[in-house]
Length: 392
Ligand SMILES: Cc1ncc(COP(=O)(O)O)c(C=O)c1O
Image (cartoon, rainbow, N blue to C red):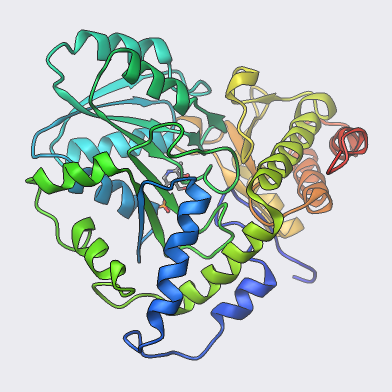
């Protein structure tokens, strides 16, 4: 198909040309003496993105899921109790992993389209007088439904109750895109991946650990091997990895982090809000459709899940967008399969790229009998962006 492919799934996101070029380099000896010059500054710079001075950061040649596992296995003991809310595919899967790893898992099921219910966290933690709960899990951005949750408020609940559980956050589709503050919010473990806000291909799992999490690692009796964080820290402290690192990806990561610092974290957060808000205007004001996120407080700045009208199916819309318009939209996952399609608005993108996605989604909906006004999405989004210019 001629023209650009429009990649608008909520990760992998678009990889900037400079990052692609950096990755496209000859293979090198991963134990050569210059490798620490690459790895050590990368880890230091990742701390700046996670906003931690006190914590440690490691990366694994894996995806985000690997770091979910690394966080749990490295800090907890066999059979420990964990608490978490399930309100979408990814928050659900992390808790499913806890069950499969045989942790006693307390799952708070919430309606899809809502996020972490603070009252329920409070209820379970206040009832846990003997501090059996050792870890509290929160998915900051539920990518399946386009819902964000208030991590800082969960920390406050733990502090108010003087509860010592570790606070573990899934930041796979929020870190490096919108506000996340590891030290200020008292996050003990944060998990992310290279393929979303970091504007990289998939292949690196990122894990931030607080001092408290590192202390917990010392007494953890859960067996680990590939995902042994202590081994990883020992090697990366010397500038290497315990096994073959994806050096090409790391060369790309260097450039991606430079781009992030060039733009500035807070500017990145603002840009993601503006782009998300314009997209929401297209969906709600332009098309007259609903977001899966039930209330404004849940709106995600990295992905919008759009509910198709009753009696219509999102699957052919996604298929038409892909085959006819060269546009990849995100599918509805599990409970919301066929009911929503998703537009990812994260990473390396701007208003005009989003106009292309909005326009393509609109045509694909019209092709499939969903009656939206041609041009209405782009009109509503551009009206918002005109009134709220970048830097304004
Ligand atoms: C919020 C969230 N958590 C976890 C994951 C799993 O990450 P990965 O696919 O990198 O293993 C994803 C993937 O999209 C995600 O969006």
